[in-house]
Length: 168
Length: 421
Image (cartoon, each protein chain N blue to C red):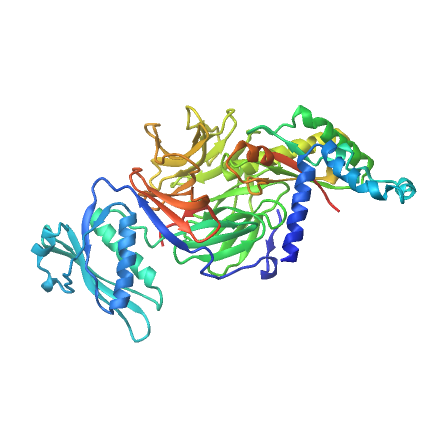
């Protein structure tokens, strides 16, 4: 039971991170940091922080969203994908899995293909931004792993996405 | 191409028969010309007889082609005991009578006769037997014999179906009788299972599993439960379909770019690319003569159904008009195909005649997807929704009779009707 609660909280946290713009996710982190800031400012400045772990960085965004039945990266998300491409170019040891997802409209098999096209589109853009193919893997979950499950656009818009999932 | 034989450690194979038992079957509508039939309770073992009678009655009713006439106290067990006038008064065109019992070795045996109450003739007797405990199999076999004698079509009550049950992150591949009962869990995973496909002889299932982190195609024996990974290329490996002779499979791979159709042997060898569209080509299904493939593609801008020869060559667009069309499957005679039609945000089960090109909607629309024909072409199984969950449903090929099958828990998805036993 304990395990279940922890994993649910974790999923919610990840979902919140991925579905909000970086500016929003950075706010609570800054508030939490405030009380301890007086005791440890030097230490955090001395360590070279991986920008991937900086909630204020554009790299904190890990999802790209799409209109219905569209698989090309939208203008609004291009800076995010390009920033990840640049980061990967500078961090050759990092690997990322691109996981394409779809809303439930369409057949499961068509959506699997569409999700793959979404993930492949992000992969291509990452490569154009400097990432190497060996750092990237694109897969699709089609409509099988919805983030939200209601039959409405509010849920569908969350489900039409490609997640950038860095391996540990 | 990689070949892998998975040990039992890799997956959890369960043999539970309580996984998602069908609790309730709801029937809507009635056939145009229903045959009134009286199922007289068999003599012999009364408890066994009543159980078998219930299964036969449910099967015949589900077909939409029969109306059950209450025997109302009359219970002849031999032709000599039948007074045809009794049955004409009750409006029965036919009646079945017989004896049910358990043999010394535990086998169940039923001897029954079908009588024509109008012509007052004996339509013939049958003995049906099965191993101990196989009461449902006996009931389905009797229903098949009655159905075949009175309609002239092949009965499909003894066939099986496969579907995926999803409950939270848990996916189960389930094989069940055509009425949803008697299910066996073939595979249980915490990753998606998709696109089950029966081998033509019903001995194997191909399906897509995500247990390796991405969509890969497996073939599994229903008897030995042994599994084989047959397509595991980078990206997605999906939508398996068997040729009618079982010698070939069509699969959809992204190894060369977009989702394209390939042919491969069921052991994973002799891979050959079939389509070169650069668009999404998926959901291939072989024609009954093995000469053509139907598939869904967005090559024309919207998702539509196409047909191409297995020998290669250009594809021909089959569906036109508004909306999108997915998941095509041939009828057993190859003259009609069934598919999912999407229009104005609703999904319908639709059929189209190859000769007339006429599309016919069989359902009212909603979340109705993934149709497949029963082997006799008279019923279509599909995925629907009821009470907020994914359910199994059937519709008669004329659209008149619908049946919703509510399972105990979780969402029922991706059903496919199996071949004749």
